[in-house]
Amino acid sequence: MPPSHQQRRNLPPFFTPVKLRARRDGWTGQVQCAFLAELYLIGAVSVAAVRVGRSRATAYALRERSDAEGFAAAWDFVLRGPARPDEPPVRYCRVADWRKLTLKQLIWMNETGLWRPVIYRGKMRSIARKPDNSALLRLLRRTDPAPKSVAGAAR
Image (cartoon, rainbow, N blue to C red):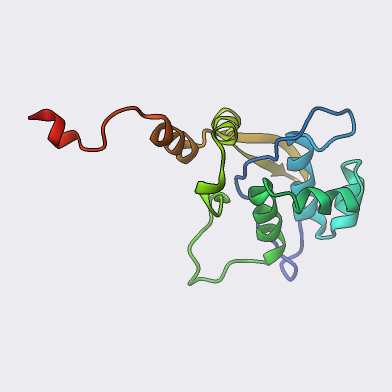
């Protein structure tokens, strides 16, 4: 059941899932999406974590990781409440500082893309995915061997 109009929350935006090692009881990308969907529907972190089969403590531990900026921003966005008319719409959660990402992290972000839970009639039905073009462009910019001045090379 979606939240009432008094408690309306924002639908989860696109975000980059946190890369973790594979575990049966781990926070996979699907579990992260399901958690954000439950957080949207319920509004309580502990209940949302239990509904996806994880604990509240591990949810907060995942949120505090250094590479979980997108997940934490999506979490904050869901709980922030409806946007005011003067605020620009947020389509996905950006990384705060691209310079702090390693090439390995950029490659993973490019391969994984952006995820968003699709919620219909009070349940998460699927995961919408789209390519992370900004990660691709950052990756190309860092690895491009072309000279900085194209105009000087054409003469």
